[in-house]
Amino acid sequence: MTSYLSIGDFSRATHMTVKTLRHYHERGLLEPVDVDPQTGYRRYSPEQIPVAQVVRRFRDLGMPVEEIRTVLAAPDVPARNRHISAHLHRLEEELGRTQCAVAALRDLLSPPGDGETPRIELRSVGEVQAAAITATVGAEEVGAWFQGALGELFATVASQGLRETGEAGGVYADELFTLHRGQATVFVPCDGPVRPVGRVEPLLVPPVELAVIEHCGPPSEVDRAYGALAAYVARHALAVDGPIREYYLVGQRHTPDSTRWRTEVCWPVFRTGVAEHG
Image 1 (cartoon, rainbow, N blue to C red):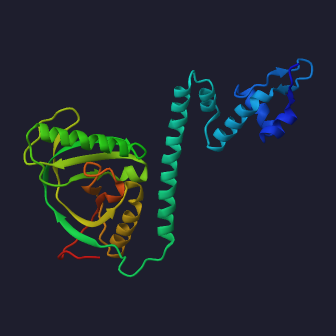
Image 2 (cartoon, rainbow, N blue to C red):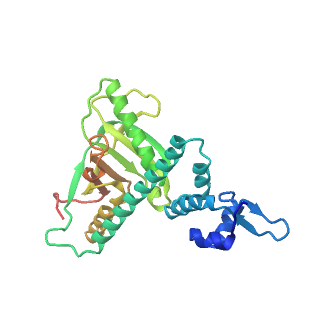
Image 3 (tube, rainbow, N blue to C red):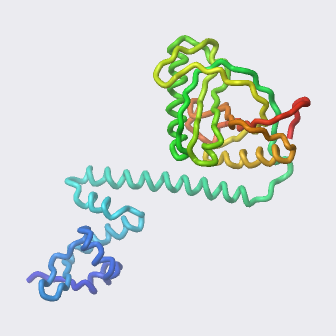
């Protein structure tokens, strides 16, 4: 004789609420072995308890119902494990981002110690010949676009036998910050005019006066450098209209460890005297 568990007993056995079990039935994730056509009562078999326990643990790990269904329907153990490993990898990435955000928040809440005032330099930058890529991009896609453009620029400069003459840089229109969509230019200074190919064009990067601060760490934390630089420029009444610049001293090209990346953030300013330091 086949033994069944009522939905209440199955709920107690698996620590899943009756409401959750009904929901999983409707989603085709954990279907009862029998549903009474007259009363609609659901009945489960004892053999379903281990499956329910697996489902519960997957949900505790944040795995979507559709993904759990794919795991349970996997044709063999290797296929099932590939799905599980992919989800665990996403969890590890999310944990890493959360840990970085927590560390950054704690750092923001900690009072600055002696000697922690950021160093800001006023700098005159002359006209520079460069290979460049320009596009209108959204703020959410600028990171991926930037890495792709920079790789294309380095490859083009090298393939044309040109020599890099300075650090790669970027020029970013105000709209990219104020509207989260605007023009962005990435450039690599080089010792001769680059021949246009693909997205790459020659560019004369114009001269400019800049207030410069160095940010050490990943791009996700660069807002602190921007904030400190903006406050300095406002205090000294130096601000002028013009796009923001960045120079990439150490980046993905040099090391995959983003905590070691170094970026100069540059605010256009007006000055008449000699260079100052903040």
